[in-house]
Amino acid sequence: MCSGRIDLEFVLRAFSNGMDGVFIGGCRLNECNYITHGNYHALNMVLLCRRIMEHIGLNPERLRIEFMSSAEGNLFAELMSEFGKKVKELGPLGLAEGIDRNELKLKLAEMTKLVPYIKLVKSEKLASRLMNPEEYDKLFTKNEVDRLISEVVSYYVDPEKCQACMTCAKRCPVEAVISAKNQIHVIDQEKCIKCGTCFEVCPPRFAAVTKIVGKPVPPPIPEEKRTIVRKSKEN
Ligand code: SF4
Ligand code: SF4
Image (cartoon, rainbow, N blue to C red; front, side, top):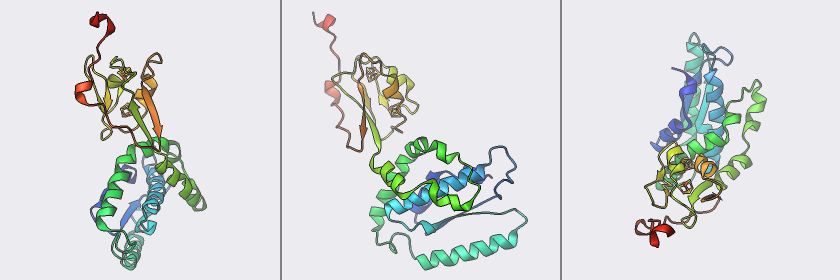
């Protein structure tokens, strides 16, 4: 019902499903029925998504947002036919940009996986209320988004330091920490949304969670080597 409900992930999914263009229609800015003003969120999300599209080599004009009231049927029809023509001109998604279909799917899947992280890091800007269209281009710059994606943060449990206190596993919001009593903990990188909670809550005397920026995460310690043998039990 509200354009503010349209998540960045929905747009990436539409492109991943082969849509050549995505059009989002929202209520006029400042005429939202709710105190949330979700149409500003939708606008900011579109501005961010366009930069992500540029990053992966897609033409950002394939994504468009317009604001109108429900009484403006003519305007809606006009905008839709204009956008339809534009998308036809742009040609088939990926092919027109010279990106192989499978490669594009992989790139979109990679970006979709980063959505929670991107939203977390850019939460402040995503909550902006831009009053002037001249500000749109400056909200997210190409360099900023390119850097955000190339310097993406990951978290890793150092098996030499983990004492299996289980704090990180209890606090992880998405159950991404593989945890068991007396077992070195491991972060499931597929599930991890990079919120950094484990890094913050790991007791400083252990400091077992490492923050990795823009580099690959070391492979997880093999299952058979995860048991911690306490010194007192050895004797
Ligand atoms: S960074 Fe967040 S999501 Fe990832 S393992 Fe740590 S607590 Fe869980
Ligand atoms: S909080 Fe630190 S020491 Fe405790 S289980 Fe997690 S990584 Fe290991």
